Picture 1: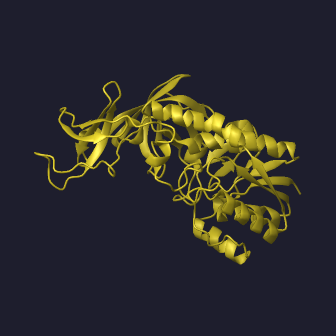
Picture 2: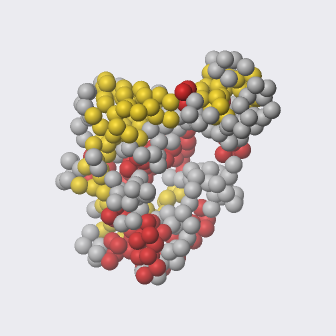
Picture 3: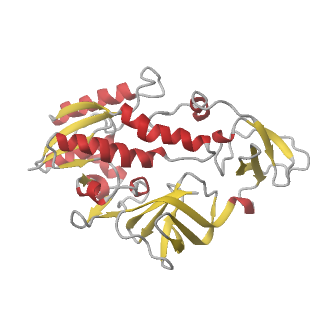
Length: 356
């Protein structure tokens, strides 16, 4: 029997994780991570209800539950980077950084201090190999696979990690929760970033990044609208542009964000999902992180440039310690600076980097 600390979020995935481990005979301790405290009374940030659900899960399983506050670490290691990236006109993915810096660093350190032999989370992913030579594998449920968000984990972190849900589908997890009588069996999955919740994203950003209006223009330079600040938009964005009645525009064709002209504070927009400016075959990434040996120049792999995207075949054109350049077989749509490109070799997640 091992002492295992489980990160309980108040959702069904982490609850079933704890139940599975207890069923195997382990000593299970639940920990609820409080990573944001600026909006405790905001209905968009339901941390209080989540903690009550964690307590209910703890009662149902008969396990000890602890609340740990990592708000300071989150603000310093994740949120500061988040704002810096947005100010620079990029679109960061804070969930990736939260996993590597909070869940598998601050939280893992805390779990080890509690005498844990391992920590477990409700991520949909699998592990193979011995400690020191771990491989991160895709989950059985392709629709729920979360290896994209875990690509920055290193061997020391993976040596202490458990992902019990990697071999289950989401419907199976919910069925297990019902059979176990867990009070969150039918709780809706949360969406959005933890410190934003489901509130309007632009309204949240405006609290930290003031409006910087400027023109929306076509690639030819024709003004077709007005933006509120380049940081509030992402490449490929369609909704919220409020472009209409433009003389000479193709009626009924939606507009998309194609690029950002930071020097002149201009947002470049195009008509049509398949406009050539929305596609690229070459992707360059920095801030590289590899779980095992790095990819090889000239070798073929698959990669994702965003979550919930089918794997796309590519070849490594160049790689060194600082950057990697990939050439995709087929053009990729709306590749966005600040997001991550994650490489795979079959079912194995190799790692990746931040798109430049």
